[in-house]
Every structure is written in C-alpha cells, then in structure tokens.
Length: 223
Image (cartoon, rainbow, N blue to C red; front, side, top):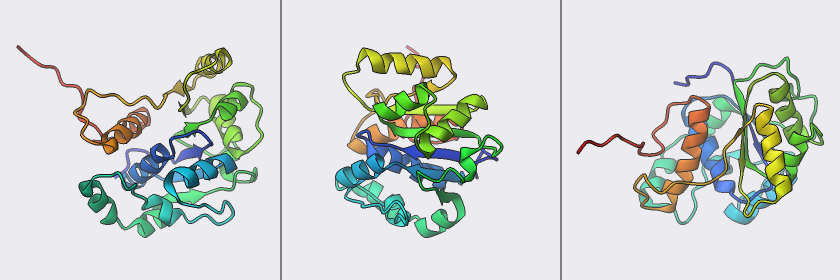
C-alpha cells in the first residue's frame, strides 16, 4: 500500500537518463502511488533514442513504457517486471497529461499533490523553473509546487556543468527544491546496471517518503 494519500506529479524532459524515469514510474505504480505524468517532446525523443519506445504524446503507449526492460537488465529483473500486471497498474495509478494542456489539474495550485519529480531534468527545464518562465505544463507544475511550498525534486543528468547551470541549481534550491543529480553510488554491492538505476530511483523514492528496497542501505559495522 502507498504511504501517500495524495498523488505525485512526474515530468520527463529531454536529458539523457530515460531509464531513471521508467524505473521511477514502475516503482511508484508498484507502491500504489497515484501518478500524474507529463512528458515533453524532447523527453519523448530521448525515451525513443534510449529505450526504443516511441511515444505519441497525444495518445502515448504507456503500457509499453511501464513494462519496458532494457536488454542489459539481468534475467531476474526481466522476470520480476514481466510478472507485473502493468495494465492494471496503469488503469489504477497512472494519469497522463499532454505537455501543452494548461487546463489539467496539475497546472493549478488548488489541486493538492504530495510532491513533484522532474526526472530527468534538462538544462532548459531547469532554467525555466529557476526563472519562473512556464512555457509548458512541466515548468508550470514545477512553479506551482514551489509557490505552494510542496516537495519538488529535480534530477539533472548533465556533465560537466556550466556556471549558469550551477547558478540555476542554487536558485531553485534556495526556493525550496531538492536537487538530486543522477549520480549513482557504488557502495551498495553493484552487480549490474540495474543496481545503478535503482540507486537513483530509490533515492528519489526516499525524498517522497515512499518505502522501498531499491538498494542495500548503509549499515553500521562493528569491529
């Protein structure tokens, strides 16, 4: 059961790292968290390049996206994903909104949510949020979460970082957002790329206060 009584907004933009978004969506649905999803055109382009899943942003095939498992995943991961009834999860927990639809609930502060995650977060999206320059539903929803003092988690995947990008990160962090760069750790017994993806997805879930076992957590050792 979900620990959240209110939904989470997820925005997917055009930075590399589409698998982080896929894994986050899978984990949220499996945790029975209601999700409102919106994807930018650049986000859809990266998803297609990195996963082969083509999304028609008017009528996206979200069932294929939720059930996606990369070729490099372990056999165990493929089996786990294949066992999930993603059609049921999609119907029960995932709502999709077109990135140009400002009449959707997540564009308004009167629609209550638990949090929002932009994963991955492109440099242009970061810039738009930092300047409160809403040019699509993702940046508008992010602005809503900042002005309503709700949890906003931004997951940039960029390297190296320019001074301007660092300044934008500082500005949104000062406004209340959590900057969570897609920087997977290596201390938890990494055995496959799945472990690195799960590390980032798990840290995002931690920020949302969603219980998860995505990683083996650091344990105090005694000598």
